[in-house]
Length: 394
Image (cartoon, rainbow, N blue to C red; front, side):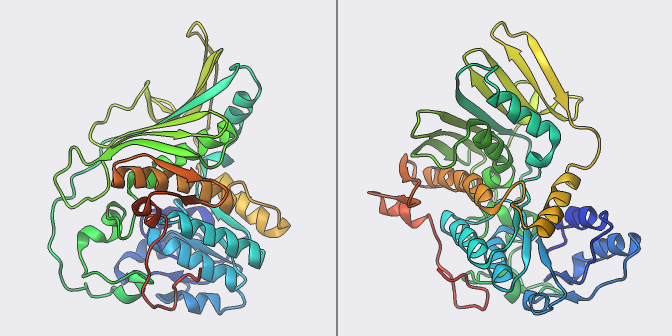
């Protein structure tokens, strides 16, 4: 479901598995599906039907799972519908557009007893698991803080006027349960995530990977306080979401996650593209993509001497995660990034966005997933839907 961009990569990853049959291609844009069909047919499989209405797939008893590479605004509606129809789900990150949607997804998976794997694939890599084991081993000493950075060069998307819906696009279904806006190419395909109505910015697009790794390393879920800064400082274009962020996530036990984002320079941080550093009083462990290297991690002791390093090999980073999902479908055991784990990571992005949008810190109750004493911030924990067959039921 959704075979452009990330969905195209998922098509490749699933077609590489010998025990997968592709029953349908589900996409609302007829102009983007041929690359997916090339992959499917190139793997020796027959060309499956193209449908734009997910319900046709859900009504088919042969279908065991939905693999979802859609824009963010369809992640929760599609997952809830699929669970209710008795299907397992592989859904891309972030799992949701807002905190409430993530909780609805968890509830749907639990109620219908479905396997839901979140497409945050890095925790399935052995080298990431080794990183987490190292942090938990005590070799870093007392671990109090993790730093996450999302520093990369994004593009100016310019400004575009609204226009007629292009031929071959089922815009009614693409809009789904959201209040409908006029069609605009800067709110469609690769630019859709930079508009608050549909997306949640780059903290939820890329930053959520590293936030999840940091959260797992510290052994924490949801914070009690979030503070900091988020704003468009650089780009003069149609993007609404911040290009620059500095956020602090405070936990009940006193530990801290710090998030830094700059989308207007290519320099990375600490010699590493988007990454995580976990700080203890006896050393620091960093994980990310180091210059000239694969995804991996390294450790420095209290004298700043490198004492350990490991890398992922050149194989696909999607393969172990896809295989883990298929194994979970058979065993009915929780997958590596089960929906609640994905919800916790995505909620960090959403809470950071609330701080950015309101311009003030928030206090969050992790048990009730609510914000007290700030009506404007609390309103951003959920969204308003129109009447549509895909509308999630609270």
